[in-house]
Image (spheres, rainbow, N blue to C red):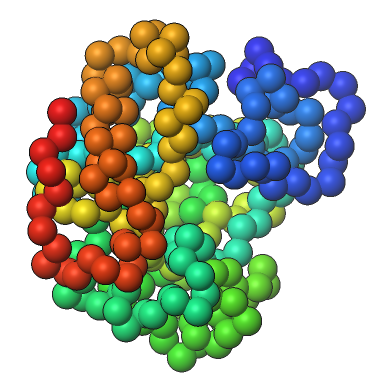
Length: 267
């Protein structure tokens, strides 16, 4: 990132990622005073860091939560320079679901198995993550429902969330959580650079969740795949095998019951 950081004056107005689905371009890092979002799986510029995705310490921690072999579904890097402002509203990761179909009683019941773990792994001190502990397996409280009254996807930026906890982490620490948790990223003014990995996994023995459908197979060219390590290439193969077994994202909130049948074996 330091090699690509722009020098000289930058646009100091706040910007989110221009395209969260594809992420920001590494060559443009630092051109704007903003919080950057880089996709690590689809961009060959980040081959040197991909070994982290299958590190035994990371997979071992997640395997204690999810069943069976793990399938990666997201790998990103959050980056920002000092004095940047970043304020993401409170949300559960349900933006893939049309608001009319966000049924909290069905989605957040304790008996429903949520086959998804998200991990935030800072490379430098990070105090950006805020969470509401325990909210991943229950419906909104009255105060939370009031905050989300205008949108089931995002609360207003100035919404106050009771029982919120700021998760302050140092390098080598990590936060693992189900991303149905009410959470946000918020730092009005970074005191030091942000460099945090953001990874997502699900277990191969159960159907995926709506968080799973992020990767575009067209971006994994044969030339790119040939440069991957065998471990990462196998993870990508497992991901797209699961996509072929479960091609319809909308089925993940409409059809799959808590006791859904096991997913097909992955490579």
